[in-house]
Length: 317
Ligand code: BDR
Ligand code: CA
Image (tube, rainbow, N blue to C red):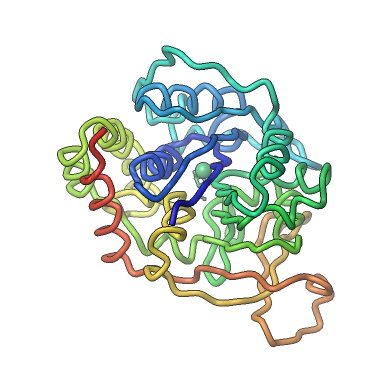
């Protein structure tokens, strides 16, 4: 089965890994990258999206997204993690390609009108574009095939505050709106991303198997891993955003739980993801009227890593 996808992204090193995997996978038809602030500012994300597609010779649209969160002032971009250029200092020049005439929000709305029931939105940055699309055209919930979101920490601690994960923290109101909407949504939180590590040896092997896609990723991973070593004592880097794509192609690698989700929008716990398991009740009113969604709560690292390597190795053009 071919998956027609749009990746909503803030490239970003693990974003680049997710994009490369989508490009390499024979069952994925990448329609577009829609951009958002987060790891870098939105115009830098657009530049990086164009640069990657250009560098890898991929024909897909790039539509520029919102430049600010819904209701909070923008946080400082994640330069500390992803480097000042978003790629850990690895230079990927833009040598062609222009952004789409439509902005990301209208692009997403139009694409789901053109292909009703066919498009999977894979969101791997702050959810502002998706929240604005919901606001502008609430009917979009019945036109998407699925929404897969990398964000939040459900049974784990956060990565930017003790309780908040970066994508949700960067626009908590957007995250809360997207998780509260009644569309077929799967959440890939830190619970499923943190058990997986791309070690330097693994990335070198990816680069050997597929130099064109893999060499820049391995170079970027060096800088990304320095951050993980310094801040978390890990011997590699975590490919968070890849999980939102792998869910489509290797769902057996993930453990799932069903339940209602919400996001804290103010106070010291801002950005925290709240989860109420399906079939249970609590006295929290925040889940009232919210649909249950699927949450990826754990990953089989061996299965995930073997699949990523195989997909990269088999890709030739
Ligand atoms: C998420 O935040 C960004 O730094 C990564 O690209 C990923 O989308 C992980 O918390
Ligand atoms: Ca990202």
